[in-house]
Image (cartoon, rainbow, N blue to C red; front, top):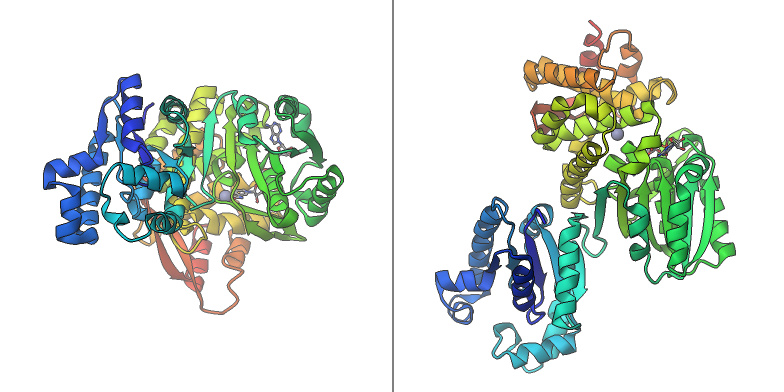
Length: 528
Ligand SMILES: NC(=O)c1ccc[n+]([C@@H]2O[C@H](COP(=O)([O-])OP(=O)(O)OC[C@H]3O[C@@H](n4cnc5c(N)ncnc54)[C@H](O)[C@@H]3O)[C@@H](O)[C@H]2O)c1
Ligand SMILES: [Zn+2]
């Protein structure tokens, strides 16, 4: 229980009572936000009456920020019970989701109204039909209450609720905020087959999709765990590799689902690299117009990149990922035990995305890699789990703010502008995606230096790290002239601009618009 626990939810869900009990049974400090506000500014009822809801919310917000600042630095992470509207602002909610474990307590409108009225005057329920008001408020707040690590019914006995909350807290998952489609990503060593059963709970049918290579190595324990839930199991083993990431493979999954009688309650489970998880998610998004799915990535790339963000899809002839959908999984299990059998080239390629992620948003991850490069390459399990967790945390933070790629998410393209061009130039075969990204990072750093954006020292440090991790870091001999013509090839209009991501410092990047013609000249100049 490294991170503070936050109890969120509507009024009268028992946040304070459950919070106090969880704190007592775990020996942790307890903070009741409403009491903290009252000790500063007097009774909440009075605040509402005299200053109005908006003023109260501002006060609540400021108090919560102070509490979070202290709680996240405390030696013993506390339990914090919130007022029902404290996390309505998305900015602070996403901060809480990143820095704490957030549990929403839920109940039916009838039960919550009954409890609220029994507890006395509630400023928000003073109208003629309190239950109607509760129903309206719950509907209004549903997307914000859904952005949590878990949602737990408050209508069970107190001890049961507290035990469930403690379990979620101890699990310490990472959460991806996506309103009602929010989900958790679990990371660790050797835990996936023990956890998958709970995630598919109550699905009468499970469709387990893998590829033949991964299936032979790792499917059996997952298969057993799925069968143990009592679900009927449908197995689909695809041919391995990007060449099979197409609609024909998806049709194979659809047919298997049809023949096995997978209905709307079915859960699809994707066990494999990014090819398998992208296709499983896409098949799930289209089967009966969308069913639940769970990702169990088995490559480093699929864990640190494909597991977060909700992008699913297939290639269309040479157009990579041309057909697809945003479809969030129910949950993701990143078990680094699987990585012990990944090819050396595949694993090391995945490290390029890790370095990219560290540059974008986690200086501590960057130094962790620098301090342990040899152990990283040797795939020390606990270290790998830590690296995977930190990488996912950065990506989860970014995509939670920008679910549909409207802007902020673009920083994840660091190293990909030139990287994609080199990858395409090599016909997607001579270079792995990760190797291309490694070279693309070098190009982005050098370009940043030439344009006065990137400190030389940062470039040198990153190049050294890439080399120590076994990644290519020299642009000499790369087909930069060809790559220059391919850069921004999707930009048809002559003279158009591209957004280029520059590394400014460890953990800090900046996107700037640059003329395509200038970018091409600069890429050519990298050869000198
Ligand atoms: N959805 C996203 O946001 C996102 C992000 C990044 C990449 N991707 C996609 O991911 C794909 C690339 O992922 P990938 O590199 O994992 O490719 P992959 O799924 O093709 O796996 C690479 C190879 O490794 C094998 N393999 C997988 N896990 C293994 C294991 N544990 N042990 C032994 N062999 C194993 C596979 O059978 C395959 O042959 C691309 O199609 C890309 O578009 C998606
Ligand atoms: Zn990438």
